[in-house]
Length: 50
Image (cartoon, one colour):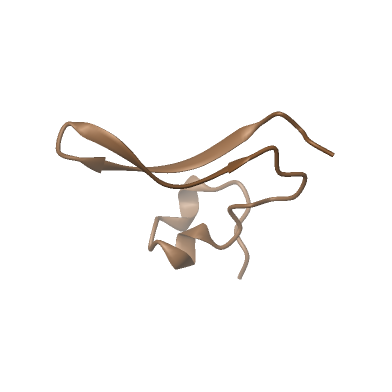
């Protein structure tokens, strides 16, 4: 299975954006723990694991 979608967490570094983590073709939610792992605001994700 491959869904053809890309999810990425970006962080601004000065005037540029840098990919912190990404997922290509995931068939399940790959970003459920990114808010905890990378200390990102939980509110930017439509799904977040407790």
